[in-house]
Image (tube, rainbow, N blue to C red; front, top):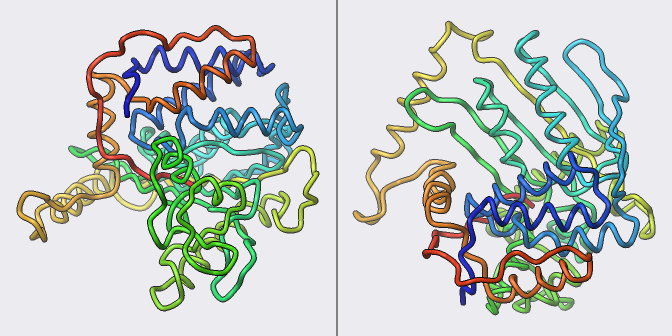
Length: 370
């Protein structure tokens, strides 16, 4: 049930008030709120304002630092390493993506790793910003707690470890892929919980190794299947991708590997990785973008399985949803509105979301990052 349909600007202001009440500096609160609402606009509810519940818990437990100071740990040529100061990952990741883009514009390639960070929201938002500068963007992140069970195992060892990739086109929007390396992002279980829906088979395991259907239990003790599910259906490939992300985001960055991190480590020390490439260093100006246009147009024009459901490419559903929701507002389930009311009250922040709401604003929900 939808209790409210809220304008993006109002929802961002609500999130910013809560984050500021928790002690985040203005720039950090603004960046975090903006990125949460951008995820909701794109239909990635798993990485929208519903994450404020998680962020409250991370900050109150000391696993994330409210007043974090971001620093440059290493910078040489086309490479850099940033230290997030233990804070939420949104602001340091915006800076890292921007720095990678700056370096790609100068050198043709830019690579920036981040350590001592935390959850940073939807990975695709950073890759998209790189693509908006005419560059190819690639982004990965580790996660603050293990959630994926390795193929053949029983114990969660890897985070949902998302991969995001964006490439600029000419007449088309940027190709934008944002995917967890689990079958479903853990945030989708949170979305199902808010909606009062059970989990489908294949998302995660119960303690006996069967499929878990209760979203609350899965959130309490994550045991997610790697992308593909079990080994028979290619789960070992998702497991391999999750490990790849961990190597780039954690081992390369010098961040903490979740299963080896003490349970009470404060802050968490999550790592990220950002890569930018300038197509103009590879081929004449406009050649990449023009060929990418032809490529995605050919995919969309290919024969669909169902005549009324044309083939899409990565990013199509999100761009379409964003256009609808910017015009009509963002729908919020009743349970989420009440959760936000409680969070605002506990923080001592004003609650702005009472009212009759606006138009529908519905579109297909997307899973997004881990």
